[in-house]
Length: 84
Image 1 (spheres, rainbow, N blue to C red):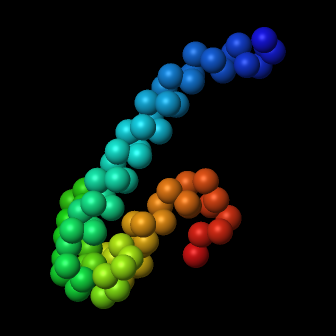
Image 2 (cartoon, rainbow, N blue to C red):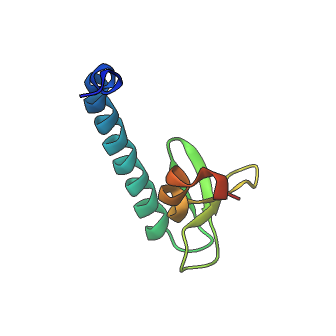
């Protein structure tokens, strides 16, 4: 085993747990947004969002009007250079 690998191995469990927690959190966010009718408001982590009018996607705007695509979070996690 490479020395660099041995040095990082203790961090693997913490990384796996953090990743699983983020996935669980984002899946919950997506579920909440998807269950909200288009044009209606919902709250995530204390922030109020308004669901977009497209029923096929899970886009929403916050109070300042910033658009977020909750259905694209996973893609952005792995391909940040492709984010709008």
